[in-house]
Amino acid sequence: MNARSFAALACALFLCCLPARAHKPSDSYLTLRLDGERIEARWDIALRDLDFAIGVDGDGDGRLTWNEIRARHDAIAAYALARLQVDSELGACALSPQGEQLIEQHGDGAYTVLRLQGRCTARPARLTVTYRLFADTDAQHRGLLGVDSGGAMRSAILGGDRPRQVVELAWRTAGQEFLAYLRHGVWHIWIGFDHILFLVSLLLPAVVVRQGRAWNGVAGLRVAGVDVLKTVTAFTLAHSVTLTLAALGVLALPSRWVETAIAASVVVAALNNVLPVVQRRRWLAAFLFGLVHGFGFAGVLAELGLPRDALALALLGFNAGVELGQLAIVAVVLPLAFALRDTRLYRRVLLPGGSVAIALVACAWLAERAFDWQLPPPFGAA
Image (cartoon, rainbow, N blue to C red; front, side, top):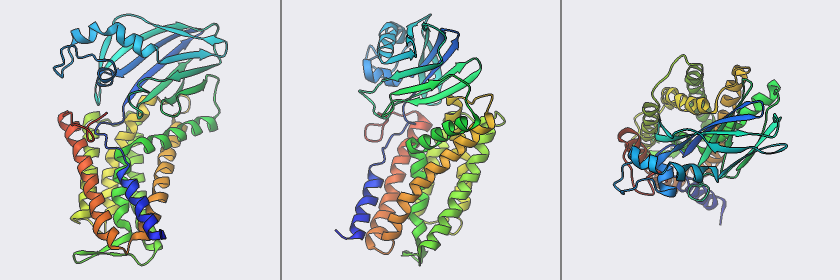
């Protein structure tokens, strides 16, 4: 296999292996509040995920009623708590459900709210949280953990290949706070498939130029690199502005509107590669759509929680992490695309075919997010 064939195979696999999930990746939101050795917890879990895992829709009509949810309260609590363990350095901090079950609306649907209480042997200096919720039904599921200890907020992402996290409750240095949110930013862009496909849609035409009705390869990697630099910089500047404004509470948009607009941005960016309307100023389109994507990033950051004692550093770290995650994607896609730019395979198959595939997946996202439709696999959410 020559170098170009290998690059073509790698590029095709990269495009085909991106998951086609119409909803944002499945999440739950776990908040632990410590007061000495006492723990109070709130756990928001998507009802659609619980219905898939243990069955909540008693009559099977596709709609969840309050009576059905209430009837499964004990089963839901037992299922969830069997997959969560909280330990201090001195032993287990047993948690048990308290009070009635509640329902909360998040941007992607209805969530059940479990209220929990527990007690550690003594005031902990660190917590080890082991999280395996939906590990057997949804490999993409993640738990967003927030720990409030004396007003200091700590956060972590649980699940997948990181089911166990150690959360230090002691005061963190500025550098440690920055690095923690840097990791969150990198991780978020790597699991944010809509952001990834939007970026790929912008990268695919960077190595070719439109002449008449045909695409021709650019003269050199420097030309493609300059185009990518302008596009990624514009996207970065735009989402940095709205991320900061939204995270600080200056500007807010409904989550459903934001997620729908992000899906629409992927459709437009992909179709522009098939029927080019914007060619020389893709950076401007990247800037305009980047404003919308920034609100999406802010939603995740809000769920993670921002530390009140290091707000600016957390924002800077998360944003820097998003950029590092984007650069990693560019480092994979751009060299492959450049190596194939003069081939018929790239110009007539990978560029238009990959763009159409991305647009179809994004249309499925758009339908589910805008109209709350449930589409069948592979387009529907797991």
